Length: 114
Image (cartoon, rainbow, N blue to C red; front, side):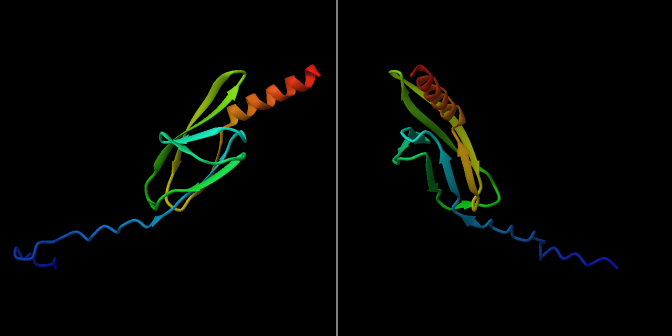
């Protein structure tokens, strides 16, 4: 027998569970003397690997950060851009590979000239 329907007690769906929130950790590999800009803000730091933590983010949906690494080479500013997609609780590593490759090629050429 089906359950009785009572107009005075409307059926409400169960409340959706709120996603857990956690900070994410992002490690960026880039040339040691590069400037790093994240969402338009310069991020201070030195070295070829820089790690930062995000604010707490929901674990059930992606967020992104637009990152730009800039280096000065032969009197010009060279840059590479990345969009890093992350969820709360993740540990990511991203690499500015094009800039690193250009620096390696330049170093190899300089050594060959000597």
